[in-house]
Length: 197
Image (cartoon, rainbow, N blue to C red; front, top):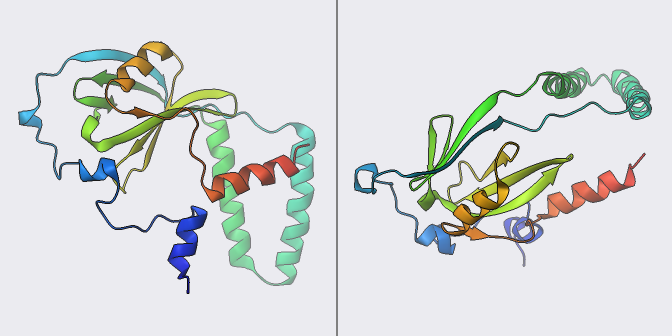
């Protein structure tokens, strides 16, 4: 009989596996010893926004979502689900604030030790693979990490020579031609395709 965690692993929702079963994780040292690393050699530096700039929806889409939201809010008021209304309103507020607030400029540095993002160092030994992605018309590259805390780093590529960056990363970590998609990614894309207005 299948257990729930086996089903969610199969669908790509969770990833419960034995530690050390992934090839990159088996080769991952427990702690990166900075004093044992060779002298740092900087390959590439650039400055870019910390996240893609999101533009608002068009007016017809805003109007459609507003009408749907009001109907759902009225139903929730009738059902006296005030906490759920508060949660939904807070999510809408955060989305609005993020779309209206311009992202900070962040400095990136690729070196012989790894990738530094605004004085936070990520070592090559902690990285598994990378791929290029395009989100809402903005190009980015994504680095999958071997640790469970930070599973992916999304880095915008504006202001950098992408081919040079790709050649540097290819010499250090594995490259994926096609971005991996989990069950949730596929479901999200299919739902978005249904609401194409």
